[in-house]
Image (tube, rainbow, N blue to C red; front, side):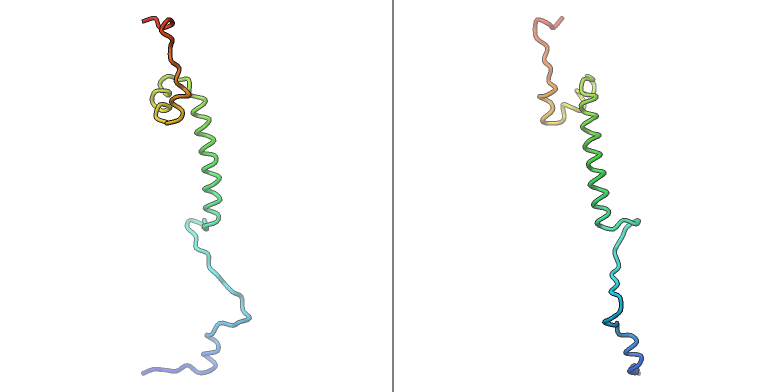
Length: 90
């Protein structure tokens, strides 16, 4: 059995052309896509700055030099400090 709505009920269910246009924004943990992109850009900038500081600050420590800096392709030649044969005690 199918009921047809009355004209009054059909008019009440139809959205009004004069009413507010509501668009729901998707969010995860309170972050929308634009705010997540902005926060990610800022966090990435701080991460690059911190990584650059660590490399230059700890660059002269031999253990850090061997284990970390030798793995970075462009920095291995920059931090290569060969010892001249006449200065080598062995």
